Length: 518
Ligand SMILES: CCCCCCCCCCCCC/C=C/[C@@H](O)[C@H](COP(=O)(O)O)NC(=O)CCCCC
Ligand SMILES: Nc1ncnc2c1ncn2[C@@H]1O[C@H](COP(=O)(O)OP(=O)(O)O)[C@@H](O)[C@H]1O
Ligand SMILES: [Ca+2]
Image (tube, rainbow, N blue to C red; front, side, top):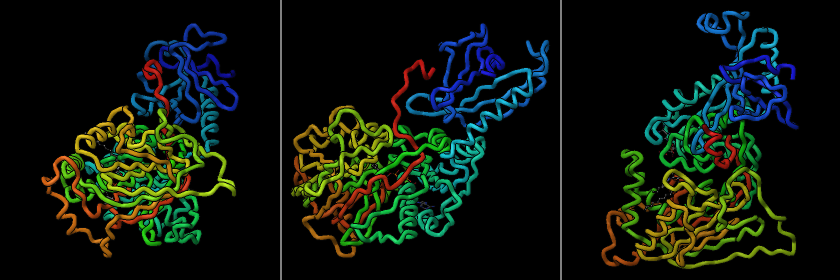
């Protein structure tokens, strides 16, 4: 109340603060006439304090001072509020509004009050550890960080120690050695592979510090304290896209600055009681494993490698015989075939835990599969805007297990096309989907003991199965694509760990109306 009418911003606004229950709101209102009790108007915009990036005193230059109305008035004072503005398609931008008045004391009081409010937001990071993969995606990681992220971090007074990686596993290994206590979060600039490295470093370090043996598939893993931010600069950027709604470096930087938090499930993958990897997005055998194996050889081609390998793998049309055993997730709410996506927000949607009378019952399915996909999240990405499992929940302790059985090329193509549109991907006789807490896969053919499948790979690719043009050509083994990393063992044991990790994100927001964006 004490500041009402004191500030004019540009031609149209006054700055008014008022409390709404527990939240302060910043509202620019039309300047003239100044209503005694202002009511919302088309010029009104409301910015929660939690979305103010920073507030700064504004230097008044000569041009301003000698122009228009200020000439006749006393020397003006001003401050600028930088805040998050929503743009189209889940993008966030940094916008600002400058407020003017003629009383220095009042201006300082406003700045002081706003700064105090911002200080109270303890969820915001102050000091970050940043890893940049200079070779991810279009090799723009360093440029993206320096040009798009650093100016925003500076504005928000966030400091960072930056490590540009020199080799694969650099980020992961360094997280085991570095003093992580002094950081409020870890940021990775790169794609899903780079994010995977950072999460392995962070989860691995946490387990080591807490004395938990990662090789034990039954071990209860300890949650990580540090949040991870992803600045997308990779090829698929699925984790970023599925948790923010877009792969845009500025949007991700703003989520980090305002200190958003999003819990997410992590699956552990073991082979014969030996830890292999963690997975947060796609764990795919058959189609997606084969694409990855082929595309890694074409890394020099850049992003197009996935399209070429995708096309080649589609034509190869290989299927793999094996057994999938899984433990259905009885504790979760919803089903993979729900119409509404369930990845908004971070709430852990679980029913009551299993009582002693409820028994865990494994289900076993045997067959020939073109693809076995386990999606811990929707796996939305620019290629598949709804993802492979649109209703998969990020933080409910379950994964959606999708089994695509042997079928004709035409049917498989129909299934793949559904990745790209709104139609139900699971509405095919040859596709099954289950929400699971654990699963195991065993190939009919035992793994090569060394896990060395190179020769097999050579035989497998480059041949379009001319013997069976309409159906599938059965091959002994594929490899698993684990968040974009190849696993050489086909026999694996997977367990979902509920909310093991936190991201600087908030899930995908409902799209605001066009008026709200204009
Ligand atoms: C008619 C044609 C239909 C084509 C449908 C394509 C659908 C693609 C869905 C892809 C889901 C991807 C899930 C995420 C995988 C990433 O973890 C992994 C590594 O990413 P990055 O480190 O950023 O490179 N990416 C892939 O495995 C690539 C899959 C590409 C498939 C064409
Ligand atoms: N400096 C580096 N040189 C080579 N490989 C690296 C380097 N830094 C990270 N990597 C590896 O590059 C792989 C791919 O990185 P990522 O950022 O996901 O790019 P992309 O999305 O293009 O695959 C990751 O597995 C990561 O371990
Ligand atoms: Ca989940």
